Structures are given as C-alpha cells and as structure tokens.
Length: 286
Image (cartoon, rainbow, N blue to C red):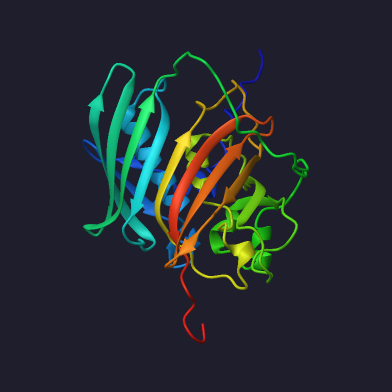
C-alpha cells in the first residue's frame, strides 16, 4: 500500500497580494491595511490604493463573468499606514452591466471616492488604431527594485521595471514628456485587473524626462479603462511582464495630464488610463 503523500502547502502570499487584501466586514464594507512600504512621495502610491479599491468592488459584484471595464478614482487625502475601510454601493445592477461606487476612509476621514463599471463581454466589430511600439523585448531574470538607483520611491521595490527610453529622467535638457518600460511585480503573480490598476500609475511620471530634478507628483484623479477580461488563458504566466507607456502634453499652474497605455508581451491592448496630477515644487533647501 502506497504511503500517503503530504498535502502541498501553498506558498505564502507575496507583498502585493498580502497588502492589497480586503476582508468583508458587513454589507458593502471591506477592511484593509495600508502597508508600510508602498509610499510614493507624500503618501501611499495611488495605483496601490486603486488596487485595494478594485478588490473591494470586485467582491461586491461577486460575478466572475462581469469583468471590470472602467474605474475612476478621486484622491482626497493621503492615508497613513494602517487600517482603512472601503464602503461600496451597487448603484445599479443591469442584465449585463453593474455600476458601483466606493468610498475609502481612514479614522472617519475621506481618502478617495470611486466609480466603476463591470460588464460581461459583448460581441461586435473590432477595430484598432493603437499599436504597441516596436521595442526590445523584456530581459529574463531582471531583478526588482532597480528604479531605486535613480531616486524612485519605496513602492518600486515591488516592481520589475525595464525602461525603454534613451535618457534617464530628470537628467537635464528639454525632452518629450513621455516614459516607457516593461513592468511586472516582483512576486510571481499573473497579470489581472488588480495588477493593471497598480501598473496604471506605476511608471515614472511623464514630465520627469523634461525637468531637471525629481519632485512630488501626487495624483488628483485617475481613470482606467480595462480593455480585456483577464486572465486571457487558462494557465497565465505568473512571471509575465507588460509594456507600459505614459505621455503628457501640458503642465500649467502645476497640473498636468498623463495618458497611459499598457500592452501584453504579444501586443494585446490591456488597459488605457488618464490622470490629472500635480507637479509640486520642492521646498527651498529640500
């Protein structure tokens, strides 16, 4: 008689999976904890908070056939590391489309407001004028956290980032306001909508190649359009990288817009985003 085999112990969740987790705590209420090491400038990274909000919204929809299609977040204030609460409301549940709102709070204070749309897939005509740029493919075995070497904030320790631009940001000289790189999580985890919410705000801000020094650039609002339901295959690659590109056209009175696009390695358009952000001047002597 064969000896019984011990049950395989699942690997513990990585930092992104662990620190974006939410726990149902009542009708439309989800508790979470903002991690210590997701800071980007004055507070936690906006894409990281977007991932937490999207998790709560996805659990509220509770229908795998309805994938996230649109998420818009207005950031009111930066939370401190520690407990937060996300309150969700299903504003309308149609036959194919769910419309929801969410409110993130900490100690009774508003952190962020969100609106989202989830829908089943529809059949129809496919047209595309957006093509992935021709760039060198991602390099295997590239270590995470390399962006810290040129001044990137702590949250980038959780990223594999392989730039595909000629010059380093904030290097001096007037250059186009754009940046592009291969992106992935440091932990083994397939790309899904939660990861795309994070990636949509994870690149170096588009104005940085055109300025002489780094400066805080907090997000005011962020909209993400998810262009495919994920995962696209039954067995997605947990180490897959995606290619992300951001561009800006105007900085005025401190504010700039940033348009982003994310593709898979095979050129499939995964997500598009737009945000309004504030390029803050460094204080004298800072």
